[in-house]
Length: 90
Image 1 (cartoon, rainbow, N blue to C red):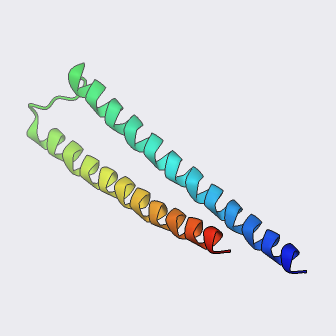
Image 2 (image 1 turned 120 degrees about the vertical axis):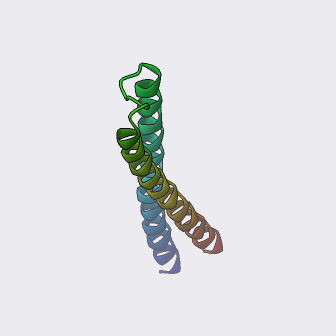
Image 3 (image 1 turned 30 degrees about the horizontal axis):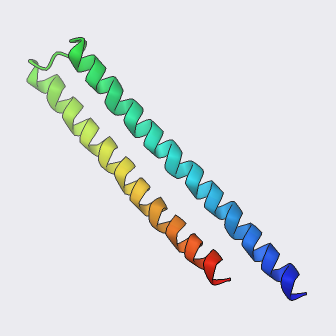
């Protein structure tokens, strides 16, 4: 009975880890895609950085988006570390 309980707990932790890993990876992909898109738009001059109002809105939006992505990444990285510690303590 003890082995069955151990396997169930480990499988549940593995599933939770995989879910958090998927969110972590998706957040990183979204972040880098956004940054590459903004860089391409600036280099190809699709965004007028001389217009201070438009550029300010872009900077504020980018700062909020990037900080949100970084925060989510850090949180899920910590949660994944906790799950790895729980699995190793089993």
